Image (cartoon, rainbow, N blue to C red; front, side, top):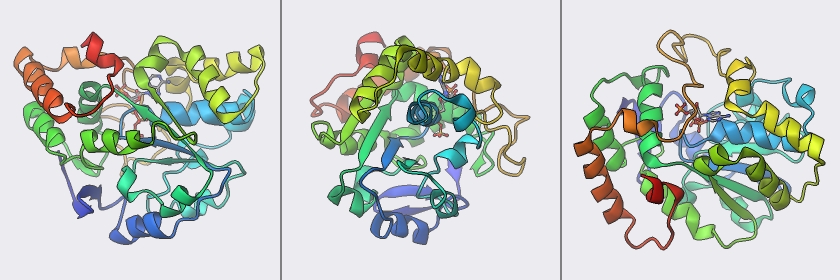
Length: 288
Ligand code: PPS
């Protein structure tokens, strides 16, 4: 997984999206408000899905209101260079995205009442999604060597560092009342149920018709067909849409079409080793 990068506190960041200054600023100076809601994820874990869901919940399912802006402006990643301009225009409660690991997250968050929704995904599917995205997003040097890609991912050489550290870092907060976690796979299995749980966490009361609208507009098909949500408005020097689409497959288990048996066994072994002291089990551990 090759991209022009720098390291900060053991984590790889991409030049072109980040600078040392933007990351230090995000960590030390960014001002978190008590009513903010943060969508935190390791890349390719369902960030945009959650952006769509949360903005629709905020507007009680009113699609015309949420769909006025492209998704990456509706809820910018606050660590990205240039994002402050868009964050300054957000109406409260601000819904802000971030891929930052726990140990680099805004210090002011930890003194605030702001909420975090952390979404996780089967790391095998994260690898596959990222592998395809690496040929589309211009900051990456495309590669066809899937084995090397897996190896880089395992060694934490991916954008935003190690998946294992990210998940373990953030899940230290699992019992904090400001923190809610959910998996991509749970949303695939029962989107409506997920939306209802998220509303409860946020203290948002939506009626059945409003929930139906949130679900209708956040399905994979709706988002894939929606130019405000499918990233097709990005210029070709940022994303080469001829090489693939941001809204690619939107399923769980696509890793089975990419990993060989040997790669799958190898990854399982590493996974067991790295997660052995982690006292939680995930949906994908039963089904993979
Ligand atoms: S990023 O670049 O890190 O912000 O990407 P992220 O949004 O986290 O993840 C992109 C993957 O999520 C899929 N996606 C969805 N799946 C199901 N339903 C909905 N509504 C949805 N929206 C986005 C998207 O297709 C990417 O996964 P893959 O496996 O590549 O299709």
